[in-house]
Length: 401
Image 1 (cartoon, rainbow, N blue to C red):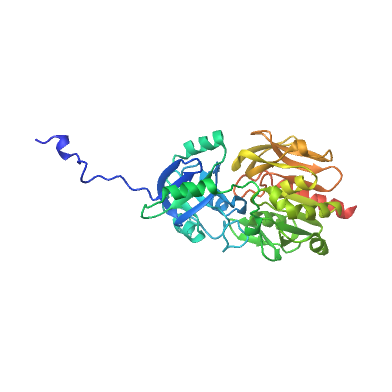
Image 2: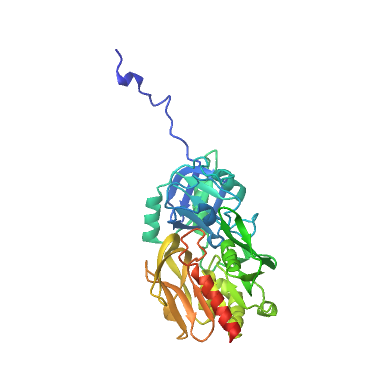
């Protein structure tokens, strides 16, 4: 009769710990070990966490995340695969600027009828390195306590890393404050947009009878924002972020839209704010989302501040002070408008119910309003779609005046 001990593996045979093939190296020297997916190599960025449980493809192709390494708090990311329809960057072939992705569990094979590619293959094709096997709850707690750290994410299939060099790279990365990332994600030329929102039976539609002409300034615009503008009855002309006010006004827009985008709004504002001020002074109805909201805040004389942990997720409660209603919103921003810096004609219209930060403003003397969150809901709830109708109503009132 043999004992259990006789069958136990000894220290030299039959048992070996898997070797880490990916690292997340924080600027303070902390090294988190895991297993690599996606692109190989290493990239530096700011680590944030996102609390959404769906829409990882939309999140990873959102240009607003340029310069950031995204930690998903939901563990099962990649399980429904990817497709060609849910990409949010305007150019299907372009990168979104995301620096990496941090996951709790290993990626499974796709389990959705719309999937056309495995998540791992998709990450490789888009040049995004990833790491799995990380205690994302602990990392999220660290970010909530200490703020969003700079870091390097590295993936090497052979498990060979120069850890000291990675630590140095993480320490030397300058961070997002003062960084203008819009040039890397904006369109390079003007184009028209007529695609409308997706329907399960028919797919995406087309705008056939536009009633208004909107010029959208692209600081890193998401496709679904443009779709909702088109669905609301707008002919949409998208222009690069550096387009002059003269060129925008020469298009004779009924309204101007200021898009979302990445980086420090104060840095982008060096060239964007003078353009926006001119548009506002001319009385053109103007609507801003995310970075566009921050640009309006700067244009009227306010300032923006870096947030401790930012807002990233699809479950953020916001109160619309103009109606008293509460909506659940999608958010993605690491900077915020300082309400105390705003002039008297800038009225606060929305406020975050998580931390009380500003989430929307409107000008009392001009047809201008903006929100900090993402009403296009890609991903996220559709509570805020009404804002696109509010913009169109503003345009119609202005045209009728």
